[in-house]
Length: 365
Image 1 (cartoon, rainbow, N blue to C red):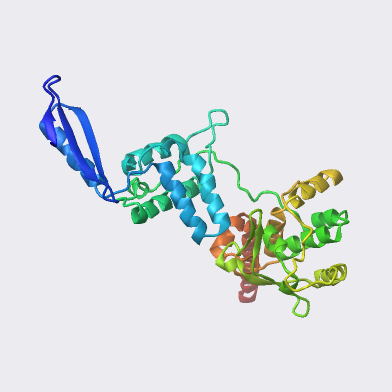
Image 2: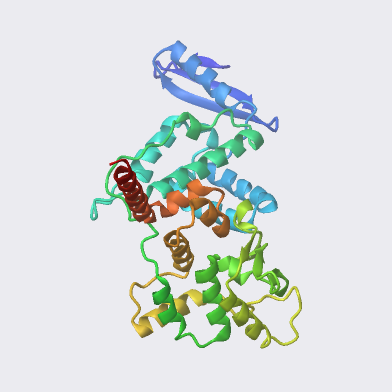
């Protein structure tokens, strides 16, 4: 029996069996239709959406997705995907086959694009909104391949746009000049910490890149270090991106410091970590030392990398050179992160053009 009328209520209902992706037969029934055609339409639409597909909740499917990712992706990438699960809590109990574009659109409007009533600012930054939404889209793309889902509801919901209202401030706002760093580093007594902070400021390394350096990655003759692994809280991993695997030249004063530092290491071997004694507590030590000596502004460890970028920009190096040294994919990425540091360079260009014009005007007079 598929569609029939309930003699007691006078309403139509649809009752039928369908098979999921494993071939298992499942019974489904829905009552309360005023017309036979409505009941039949609902059955047809349900079969189209569920026949041959896996009946699994969002939460269960996401766990299967994470297990698959753990076999194929970097630990930090999987950790980010696990972290995103908290944002999808409202979807957890819903079968993935019943999550529609309308469901996603409502979630975006009511959660992702929500405004904090106290601060009257967006709950998340544009970047975070884009990341959370993109991760969800990737998950449903996986469901299409491996759970028999017929379409991606995130893609169907359309591009997510953010209203032009007050947002969280830019992350790159506090940096040090070389005088600031000189004042700070003079108070750091531990040799490994002293060299570690120096590599971040003078070479623009990420914290994990410096922590992952091995003895064999340091070339004293060529005055350079090779970045080929990244140390995270989850252990050793590959560099953050393809372009992060690079060779970075080192200024002479750091080369001398590296030589002196290596003399302190007992029987160093090529695969030994250069900074085996530097752990996650380095960030807290960095902040505490700043407060102890009254540094202003107070910056994060990662801001030493930003300070290096600022140093290069003020020295007149092009975005291409900065991108190559920092391990960014292209100059556009540098301009996106550090573009606000370039206005003074534009003024200098205008001044140079004005001077050239005045000289030419005098010659023609």
